[in-house]
Amino acid sequence: MIYTNIYDNENYGDKKPGVKLLMETEFTKEIGIYFLQEQVMKQHQTPFPIIVQVVKGAVDFRVEGEIHQLKSGDIISLGKNVPHDLRAREESSIRLTLLKADSLSRVEDVAKD
Image (cartoon, rainbow, N blue to C red; front, side, top):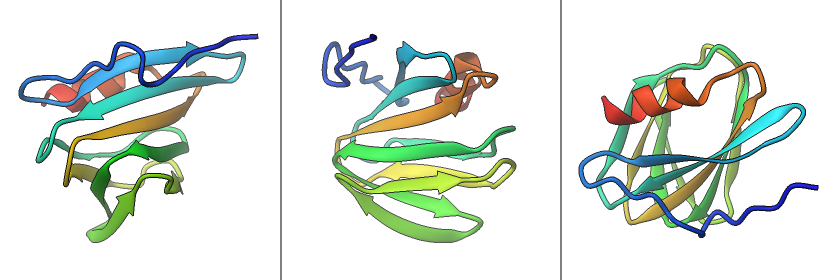
């Protein structure tokens, strides 16, 4: 069994979203992404499918040019190589599920650009 809490030691960045590994299982990496209002993650795509859950707050989640206004509780999945970006409409916490083969450093690099 592995236990974590997305709210423990929230990692908000001053200028860019904070990224934290929440847990690693046999098949996934669970990542916390912490946004202050108006922070963004620039357009990017992933080499593997992902699942994104808004745990707290509200974000504009743009997928291939179309904006989806997501709020607490919303979950979205994307296939690999789908261009997307995020902008926090308010302070927000996001749970990102990656396949084990994907890397935390890739997410950190997107967040800091």
